[in-house]
Amino acid sequence: GGGRVFRPRVIERARGRRRAVAVGLPYMEEEKRLKLLAEGKTEAEGEDSQQYAGKVLLATVAGDVHDIGKNIVGVVLGCNNFKVYDLGVMVDCQTILTKAVELKVDVIGLSGLITPSLDEMCHVAKEMKRMGLTLPLIVGGATTSKTHAAVKIAPHYFTKEHPAIHVLDASRSVVVCSNLLNPE
Image (tube, rainbow, N blue to C red; front, side, top):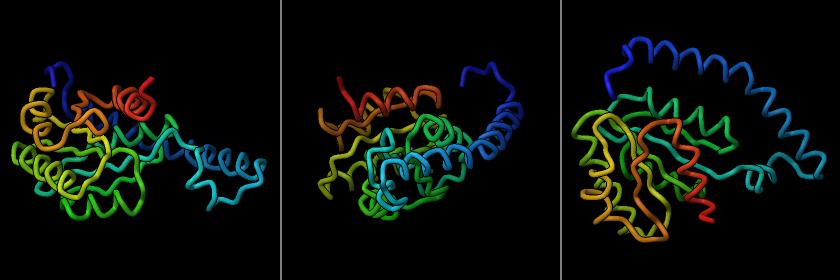
Protein backbone atom coordinates (compact mmCIF):
# COMPACT_ATOMS: atom_id res chain seq x y z
CA GLY A 1 0.00 0.00 0.00
CA GLY A 2 2.87 2.40 0.74
CA GLY A 3 4.86 1.44 -2.34
CA ARG A 4 7.68 -0.06 -0.30
CA VAL A 5 7.33 -3.65 -1.52
CA PHE A 6 7.59 -4.98 -5.04
CA ARG A 7 4.29 -6.78 -5.74
CA PRO A 8 5.79 -10.03 -7.10
CA ARG A 9 7.72 -10.35 -3.82
CA VAL A 10 4.46 -10.08 -1.87
CA ILE A 11 2.92 -12.84 -3.98
CA GLU A 12 6.04 -14.98 -3.62
CA ARG A 13 6.01 -14.61 0.16
CA ALA A 14 2.28 -15.31 0.38
CA ARG A 15 2.81 -18.57 -1.48
CA GLY A 16 5.71 -19.43 0.82
CA ARG A 17 3.58 -18.76 3.89
CA ARG A 18 0.78 -20.88 2.50
CA ARG A 19 3.20 -23.80 1.95
CA ALA A 20 4.67 -23.39 5.44
CA VAL A 21 1.23 -23.42 7.03
CA ALA A 22 0.29 -26.50 4.98
CA VAL A 23 3.26 -28.33 6.52
CA GLY A 24 2.34 -27.38 10.08
CA LEU A 25 -1.45 -27.66 9.78
CA PRO A 26 -1.69 -31.45 10.20
CA TYR A 27 0.30 -31.19 13.43
CA MET A 28 -1.93 -28.43 14.78
CA GLU A 29 -5.08 -30.36 13.84
CA GLU A 30 -3.74 -33.51 15.51
CA GLU A 31 -2.94 -31.52 18.65
CA LYS A 32 -6.51 -30.19 18.74
CA ARG A 33 -7.90 -33.70 18.16
CA LEU A 34 -5.84 -35.14 21.02
CA LYS A 35 -6.94 -32.31 23.30
CA LEU A 36 -10.58 -33.06 22.51
CA LEU A 37 -10.07 -36.75 23.20
CA ALA A 38 -8.40 -35.92 26.51
CA GLU A 39 -11.47 -33.83 27.40
CA GLY A 40 -13.74 -36.75 26.45
CA LYS A 41 -15.22 -34.98 23.41
CA THR A 42 -15.70 -36.15 19.85
CA GLU A 43 -14.37 -34.15 16.92
CA ALA A 44 -17.93 -33.13 16.02
CA GLU A 45 -18.47 -31.76 19.53
CA GLY A 46 -15.15 -29.96 19.34
CA GLU A 47 -16.12 -28.15 16.16
CA ASP A 48 -18.73 -26.11 18.02
CA SER A 49 -16.88 -25.96 21.32
CA GLN A 50 -14.90 -23.07 22.68
CA GLN A 51 -11.64 -24.51 21.31
CA TYR A 52 -11.34 -21.58 18.87
CA ALA A 53 -10.79 -17.91 19.62
CA GLY A 54 -13.72 -17.32 17.26
CA LYS A 55 -15.17 -18.22 13.87
CA VAL A 56 -14.51 -15.89 10.95
CA LEU A 57 -16.04 -16.04 7.48
CA LEU A 58 -13.88 -14.47 4.75
CA ALA A 59 -14.89 -13.68 1.18
CA THR A 60 -13.81 -11.51 -1.71
CA VAL A 61 -17.02 -9.78 -2.76
CA ALA A 62 -18.83 -10.29 -6.07
CA GLY A 63 -17.12 -8.62 -9.00
CA ASP A 64 -13.61 -9.04 -7.60
CA VAL A 65 -11.12 -11.89 -8.13
CA HIS A 66 -8.26 -10.65 -5.96
CA ASP A 67 -7.54 -12.85 -2.98
CA ILE A 68 -3.89 -12.55 -1.95
CA GLY A 69 -4.61 -10.28 1.03
CA LYS A 70 -7.67 -12.30 2.07
CA ASN A 71 -5.64 -15.49 1.92
CA ILE A 72 -2.93 -13.99 4.11
CA VAL A 73 -5.56 -12.83 6.62
CA GLY A 74 -6.97 -16.36 6.68
CA VAL A 75 -3.56 -17.86 7.37
CA VAL A 76 -2.77 -15.32 10.10
CA LEU A 77 -6.13 -15.86 11.80
CA GLY A 78 -5.84 -19.65 11.49
CA CYS A 79 -2.41 -19.61 13.07
CA ASN A 80 -3.89 -17.64 15.97
CA ASN A 81 -6.59 -20.20 16.79
CA PHE A 82 -9.48 -18.75 14.78
CA LYS A 83 -11.67 -21.08 12.75
CA VAL A 84 -11.64 -19.58 9.26
CA TYR A 85 -14.22 -20.28 6.59
CA ASP A 86 -12.88 -18.91 3.28
CA LEU A 87 -15.58 -18.71 0.62
CA GLY A 88 -13.14 -17.62 -2.09
CA VAL A 89 -13.56 -14.89 -4.71
CA MET A 90 -16.51 -13.42 -6.59
CA VAL A 91 -18.85 -14.35 -3.74
CA ASP A 92 -22.32 -12.86 -3.96
CA CYS A 93 -24.01 -11.22 -0.99
CA GLN A 94 -26.64 -13.93 -0.52
CA THR A 95 -24.00 -16.68 -0.32
CA ILE A 96 -21.95 -14.70 2.19
CA LEU A 97 -24.88 -14.08 4.49
CA THR A 98 -26.44 -17.53 4.13
CA LYS A 99 -23.12 -19.20 4.99
CA ALA A 100 -22.50 -16.80 7.90
CA VAL A 101 -25.81 -17.81 9.46
CA GLU A 102 -25.40 -21.51 8.62
CA LEU A 103 -21.88 -21.69 10.06
CA LYS A 104 -22.74 -19.52 13.08
CA VAL A 105 -19.69 -17.33 12.60
CA ASP A 106 -18.67 -14.56 14.97
CA VAL A 107 -17.25 -12.14 12.37
CA ILE A 108 -17.69 -11.54 8.64
CA GLY A 109 -14.63 -10.31 6.73
CA LEU A 110 -14.98 -8.83 3.26
CA SER A 111 -12.13 -8.22 0.86
CA GLY A 112 -11.89 -6.24 -2.33
CA LEU A 113 -9.14 -4.71 -4.38
CA ILE A 114 -11.02 -2.82 -7.09
CA THR A 115 -13.22 0.24 -6.69
CA PRO A 116 -16.55 -1.47 -7.54
CA SER A 117 -15.91 -3.76 -4.56
CA LEU A 118 -16.58 -0.82 -2.28
CA ASP A 119 -20.19 -0.61 -3.47
CA GLU A 120 -20.62 -4.36 -3.07
CA MET A 121 -19.38 -4.14 0.52
CA CYS A 122 -22.01 -1.46 1.17
CA HIS A 123 -24.64 -3.75 -0.32
CA VAL A 124 -23.59 -6.58 2.01
CA ALA A 125 -23.77 -4.20 4.98
CA LYS A 126 -27.29 -3.08 4.01
CA GLU A 127 -28.41 -6.69 3.68
CA MET A 128 -26.88 -7.59 7.04
CA LYS A 129 -28.95 -4.84 8.64
CA ARG A 130 -32.08 -5.83 6.72
CA MET A 131 -31.70 -9.43 7.90
CA GLY A 132 -31.18 -8.30 11.49
CA LEU A 133 -27.70 -9.78 11.78
CA THR A 134 -25.62 -8.65 14.72
CA LEU A 135 -22.14 -9.67 13.62
CA PRO A 136 -19.07 -7.49 13.43
CA LEU A 137 -18.14 -6.68 9.82
CA ILE A 138 -14.50 -6.18 8.91
CA VAL A 139 -13.43 -4.90 5.50
CA GLY A 140 -10.05 -4.76 3.85
CA GLY A 141 -8.29 -4.46 0.53
CA ALA A 142 -6.33 -1.91 -1.45
CA THR A 143 -9.24 0.44 -2.18
CA THR A 144 -10.75 0.26 1.30
CA SER A 145 -9.92 2.68 4.07
CA LYS A 146 -10.92 3.75 7.55
CA THR A 147 -12.79 6.65 5.93
CA HIS A 148 -14.67 4.36 3.56
CA ALA A 149 -15.75 2.11 6.44
CA ALA A 150 -16.88 5.13 8.47
CA VAL A 151 -18.55 7.16 5.72
CA LYS A 152 -19.95 4.56 3.33
CA ILE A 153 -20.46 1.31 5.28
CA ALA A 154 -21.12 2.39 8.88
CA PRO A 155 -24.27 4.41 8.05
CA HIS A 156 -25.81 1.19 6.76
CA TYR A 157 -24.51 -1.14 9.45
CA PHE A 158 -23.04 0.12 12.67
CA THR A 159 -23.86 0.02 16.34
CA LYS A 160 -21.73 -0.60 19.38
CA GLU A 161 -22.77 -4.27 19.27
CA HIS A 162 -21.96 -4.84 15.60
CA PRO A 163 -19.48 -2.40 14.11
CA ALA A 164 -18.14 -2.12 10.60
CA ILE A 165 -14.36 -1.81 10.86
CA HIS A 166 -11.57 -1.34 8.36
CA VAL A 167 -8.52 -3.58 8.88
CA LEU A 168 -5.42 -2.02 7.39
CA ASP A 169 -3.40 -5.21 6.93
CA ALA A 170 -3.30 -8.90 7.78
CA SER A 171 -1.06 -8.44 10.80
CA ARG A 172 -3.79 -6.41 12.52
CA SER A 173 -6.63 -8.84 11.80
CA VAL A 174 -5.96 -10.96 14.90
CA VAL A 175 -6.03 -7.97 17.24
CA VAL A 176 -9.18 -6.57 15.63
CA CYS A 177 -11.04 -9.88 15.75
CA SER A 178 -9.89 -10.60 19.30
CA ASN A 179 -11.02 -7.16 20.48
CA LEU A 180 -14.37 -7.51 18.75
CA LEU A 181 -15.06 -10.86 20.38
CA ASN A 182 -13.58 -10.04 23.80
CA PRO A 183 -14.05 -6.27 24.33
CA GLU A 184 -12.44 -6.01 27.76
